[in-house]
Amino acid sequence: MFLLKRSISVLALGVIAASAHAGLGDILISDGGDVTVDVGQYTGSPGFDNLLGVWAPVNVFVGHNNDWTGPHSPVDLGVIAAGTEIELYLTNPNNDTFFTGPAGRNPDSMIHADVNALTAGIYTVDFEDSNDFNYGDGRLIVTGVHAQATPEPTTLAILGVGGVAMLRRRFKKS
Image 1 (cartoon, rainbow, N blue to C red):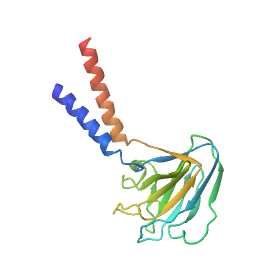
Image 2: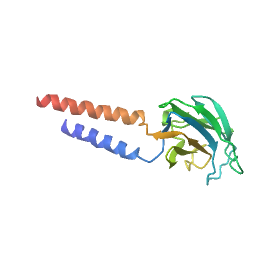
Image 3: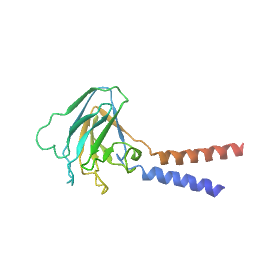
Image 4: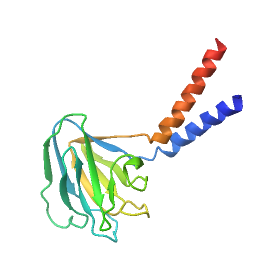
């Protein structure tokens, strides 16, 4: 029994370490003020002409992945209540739509967005439009937000099993 408990603990720690890559699967949360979204320049070379936009709390098209050349006018979402998630998307020509946040939101159950801070309150979101996972297929720049990590359901389940095992061990000693 001790070996099983130890294995669960080691497995849980391994999953936590594997999911610690900065930005992958993170979500964006409003700081409570004005939020803007714009297409940003990226270093990738997508094979598709992708659509980029905001899914929630409002659904609005922002632009194409290749719209970053020249000056832009960011899309102003207005004042968004503090704590509200700003969910972004990329849609490729095959009508596959991929979202920021955990893998479970996407049709292939993979993470398709990498969130990174430029400065306080300004983040880039680099999207993946297929399955090469270079995260160079479109970029949005979002202001008035902060990033928050979201553990995958598998991680939460493993942590839950580990927690139950620890509680069980504690009660057995009493």
